[in-house]
Structure formats: C-alpha cells, structure tokens
Image (cartoon, rainbow, N blue to C red; front, side, top):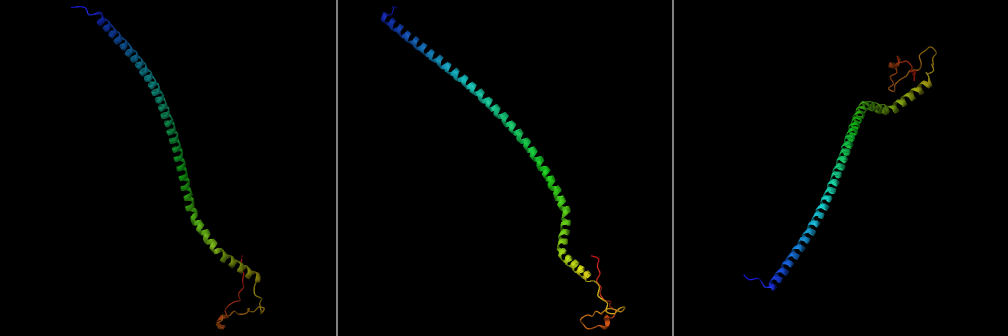
Length: 164
C-alpha cells in the first residue's frame, strides 16, 4: 500500500484537530451544564430544606393554635356548665317563689277593699256607741223597711266596737 498524499494527511490532521476542538468544546459545555445542574440542584435542595422548615414551623404553629383552641373550648364548656347550673338553681328558686308571688298578688288585689273596710270600722269606732234615750231602758228599736216592727222587739241596739 502506498502512503497517502500529504494533502490528505493535512486534511485528515485538520479534520482530527477540528473533531478534537469540537469534542473539547462539547466537554467544556458539558462541564458547564453539569456545574449549572449541580448549582440548581443545590439551590433546590436548600429551597426544599427552607420549605420543610417553614412547613414544620407551620405545623408546630397549627398544633399550638389547636391546643390553645382546645383549652379555650374546655374553659368555655366549663363556663357553660357553670351557667347551666346557675340557671337550674334560679329556676328552682323561681319555682319556690312562684306560689308566694301568686299569694302576694292575691293580697295586693284584696288590699284596697280591706283598706276601705278598716277605714270604715275605724270611723264607726270613732263615732262611739249610740246615746241611750231611756236611762235603764232599751234604746231605740231598729226596724227594717217592711214595717214589721213587732218581730223586732227582741233586737238590741247596735253598738260598734272594734279592735283596730
């Protein structure tokens, strides 16, 4: 076999050099892309850690808020039970006082007629007994409007006396 001509060797060498430059260029781009990917992966990992930390803090804050709300609920339920017991006590007291209130209402309804009766009795007592027309004899006879005075002989004169 014969040796290739120098021009072919130069062209082959130039082609090999171009292939090596292209390979070196592609390797450099690959290294740059790998560095970029590693940097992005690191940033994503840091961001992921930050998100996890934020989520953990949110979870702890949620748990604290739930605990506070549960405590508030227990306190509110205790207050409700206390108020319900107070209402039951007051209802019992109202039940005990209701008959007395009705009695007082009845007394108040009867007060004006009783006051008039007492005032009338006091006036009658102030007037005193009737004067006797016959000393030692019976006083004036009281008769009804029917004119039957003969049956009235047994009546004594009316004398008002009260202890008001």
